[in-house]
Length: 197
Ligand code: IMP
Image (cartoon, rainbow, N blue to C red):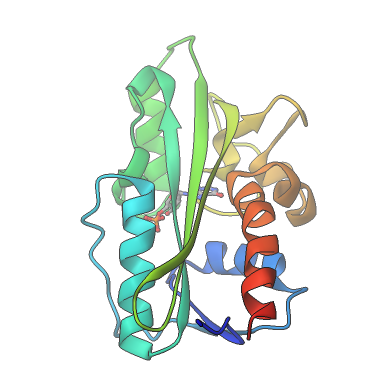
């Protein structure tokens, strides 16, 4: 029988994601460790889930520990789903990525978009134990608003809350965001795995 995790290596180098993941995992009896810098994983998958699984497996195999990876990004309807899995590679800084997206969208009136988050948990032997995916629908504003969060947060407006992700507190973002919803789905399954330990 596979024994569940007590220690989890978080397979991300993105500090914004890490902060959110720590918040979502805070209630679990779980020691979190950040992936060592020298382990780099090429995101060669064609979907968010493929990339999340690649990252989780590689980090688990390299450390000999359980590993959790997030692959996420923004899909803009009028740009046929771009930047999608290339969200991180759309520019070299958050503000460059935002400017490029706003420029490509121009005065387009269809501003619909969604964030997607795929989470994969790998056993120490590199096999995938859990995978979940969640989305959050919203609209792309014409200019940034708010200073919380990271990435594309200042231009992603959630009509239901009348706020951009960057105007939300971390707690509000956790209730509605793609990553928050993915963790809401993952946590009960992770607790069940831990109970097997
Ligand atoms: P990944 O490391 O390949 O998963 O890159 C995901 C990229 O998508 C990040 O660098 C951000 O630019 C963007 N992204 C993912 N989640 C969020 C979010 O919650 N808010 C804003 N941008 C995000």
